[in-house]
Amino acid sequence: MDKDRVAGSAKQTKGSVKEAIGKITGDSKTQAEGAAEKTAGQMQNAVGGIKDTVHDATKPR
Image (tube, rainbow, N blue to C red; front, side, top):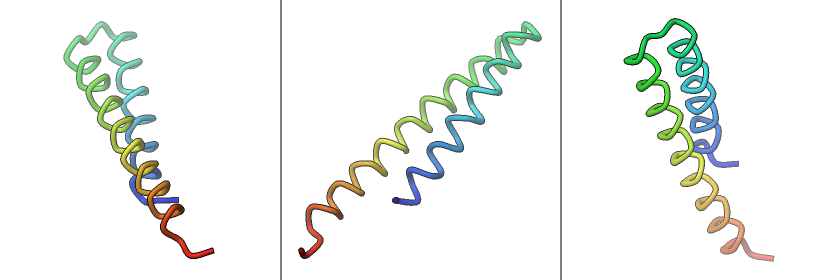
């Protein structure tokens, strides 16, 4: 598993929590920051998935 997938998943989770806290407290800035962080984590996770796929495809059998 690529390190980007791990870091992306962590960032995605942190963003989800931050977004939820923003919703609960009515803080639109925190909510928006959380949503942006969650999206960035999803993208980083996707990049890690692509790296894993490329690595697996080029691995000698």
